[in-house]
Length: 367
Ligand code: UD1
Ligand code: UDP
Image (cartoon, rainbow, N blue to C red; front, top):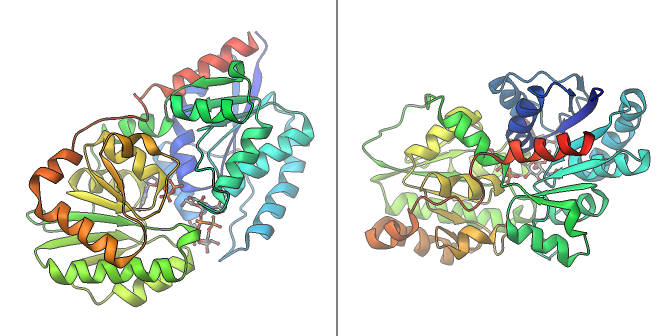
């Protein structure tokens, strides 16, 4: 087989985490000439993941600007992709998930008539405003994709419901579990001085639809919980988006048992998840990783495109109101049987072989 150029695109932290296993697996294939394009929609948070997996981008668009508007972000990526696709003429392009990077890559590939493989295809809430703008991004990417690498049977069903042909969909598992297994095996240091005799609650939050009042509610709930539970420590690596960071530090910096810090690099974050008693988060990736580590997650959202772990009782939606969040967190701290019920180690999102299944599809296609 002649060499085929596969262009793998990453923009943000979760895309790098979830594409890294695919890039590493493709690099072992003799027929594949793998090029990595970083839009760098995220800068620091992207670079630390690429360094962890020893991936060096061949092309770097260096797109990130402080607090950039979505329209500007999309327009700048799209224009730059035009030049890249004309110069590279890849045989296939792969990208993961539902960010602005992925939506624009799918569109640019469609215009250039280059087959686009969507990794983590078929997640849906069926509400375009929730999560915003990710639901629209993944619907658009899904409509334009040539290959749909769905993480679960549920995501395959979602795609079928939208009229995607069954033969274009392959259920692979989520590559985040591949990345988690590779990283956990490194047994990384946490690198933060915490009292490991105290129970640790890990917190993350960054969703755009939660900016403003919902995020103020989250901060109020965290303050109440910290004050009522001085024997518990909260570790909160704060997302650098100014709409999150400024509010979180303003509202919580004086709480002695809430440890606010910069986003943790992926390896120490995996260690933090392992040390955590449970996790409070609105993150997509964390909803997938934590069940595999046997850690309950209370999700700061009203709905989720990842219902599998909720249905199995190891992830729970707790919404965005202080009066709902506080009792749910308190129950998990106080009620051991409720805790044990949620702390069962199950992995509905993958078995660590998702990247290998994606590579199999591409190998068969080009053969
Ligand atoms: C983006 C994705 C979201 C994904 C999240 C993962 C979009 C529209 N949003 O949200 O789907 O869940 O990433 O974290 O694609 N910033 C830094 N340093 C960084 C990264 C971000 O300072 O390393 C700041 C910058 O001011 C930047 C802002 O955060 O402008 C927002 O970044 P952006 O990529 O637009 O959106 P996120 O909220 O990070
Ligand atoms: N993560 C990390 N450091 C942190 C917080 C999260 O490495 O301080 C990892 C986490 O393990 C998961 C990914 O980042 O794999 C999720 O990213 P994020 O929550 O920003 O985005 P989402 O998954 O919601 O798109």
